[in-house]
Image (cartoon, rainbow over all chains, first blue to last red; front, side):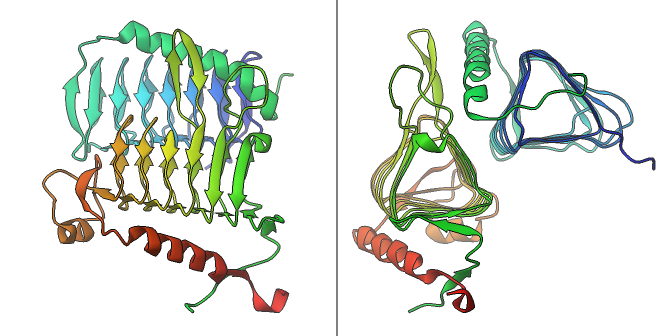
Length: 177
Length: 207
């Protein structure tokens, strides 16, 4: 296999801390926040992250497939989660220490609960508003109630971090600048 | 005395109040963190003092009491919410003699004194843990939970006996009340944390 070529494209309005491990071809959209100690590995194919995402500490995002891994806008990856899905829509929450396998594609407005394992053997696409929770990774559909409030919280959270993180952490810039 | 736990002197920084902080721990915003003294922060731990409450003046983000232990790979970060339309992080307060096991994620609002938290736990946002409580290994405490004093919280529903919990430590979820702890818990925790601190010492050939 050809060695991984590092190519980081980080939007000027994104906040990526210095203490982040990046490998491979990675594009980070505007307003996305990457906390220190997060890991993003584009092992085989590139990773494209949209705008307004929050990636917390010790999160691991890996792309082992050849195709492009696309992560949409305003997603929240909480502490210590591990995500390998080839595509993620918008406004999803992956809670602390959840693991999502490369066989799953996440649409939009999904919630993966804390410490849930989502490892189906066959490929599947999670419907919109799916909530996975509990020890046996049970599923149900969210009614969508409180969606506006949730979106508002996410937006304010991102705004806050964009303002505060640069005061205490050194930031990383893309190759272009 | 039990066997000492040795560490290499180069790895830990010792402050004059006896705190031992690993060089391999990630401490963000150290000016907003208060350590009570004789507290150990192990390697790989992440403590987020940078997520502070907005507003003027000095803000304490995380305060730890005396004789605390933050295990390896732990993440301590303050909880956040919007209140009256304003987004904010809120301070996290941890009492004395608190042990937090390895790889645990803590986003609690308050943790009392003499609390023991196991390995691989997830303590949800704004959780309040009262004095002398115990959280078993691999437990997930949902956000906004209140853990009463002298309570043991652990595993999945239907596993009430301690034996079952102990055998089933591998997959325990959605932490809930299991049983009351004996009244001696406070003395036990105090003795244990103090002993742990004395056991935790640099390698003899480096002294």
